[in-house]
Amino acid sequence: MKITFEDIRNNKAVQTYIQKADESLAALGYTEHSFSHVMRVAGLAGEILVTLDFDARQAELARIAGYLHDIGNVINRIDHAQSGAVMAFRILDKMGADSEDIATIISAIGNHDESTAYPVNSVAAALILADKTDVRYTRVRNRDIAKFDIHDRVNYSVKESRVEIVKGSHIELELKIDTEMCSVMDYFEIFLDRMILCRKAAEKLGLSFWLVINGQRMI
Image (cartoon, rainbow, N blue to C red; front, side):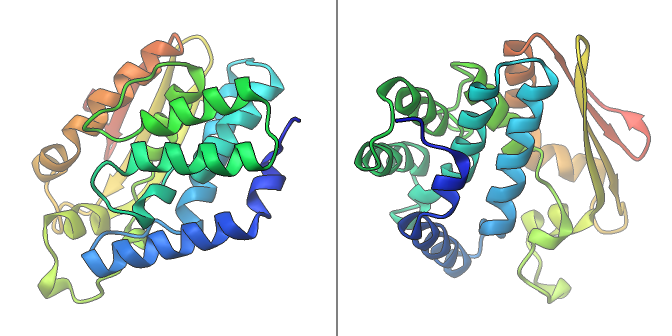
């Protein structure tokens, strides 16, 4: 059976896991990981593969992986990629999904977190790029600037964020940041591992990865 993105999006259990995972992360002080985040990731992951002329099914699998990628946070933040992959297997298998599709999706989910991530296939590469480029001030939950930690400051400083996919050339993350809130060096301190991972993911898709901050190309 070919499971669709809408099948997953409308699944009540999946909706519950996303909601409860985000509640757990909120209690731990993490930025937003709820429906806004997973919908953005799903949309961009699919868009990347469509733009690069991958077949429609691969793009659909990327959307599904993007929507499911953070459900493992309902168990624990540590190793959430691996626990999320196991949860996704259970959900997809119960829905009667094709085994090859399941394998692609859970491989992508299990390889999206910086500590263990690697773009093992095109869907994983698209997921990594979509996830790690979702940087925006609206993800910060804490509204007391005086109590911001460096993660809050870095995210809150990003006033505009845009991803551009240039077929045959590069994928670009362009940011406009408030340097009074966060210096460019602060950004690199927090997100260097993510940007290196994005470069590997882009290379898997035959592209370069560019990071542009306030009009200047940094990578």
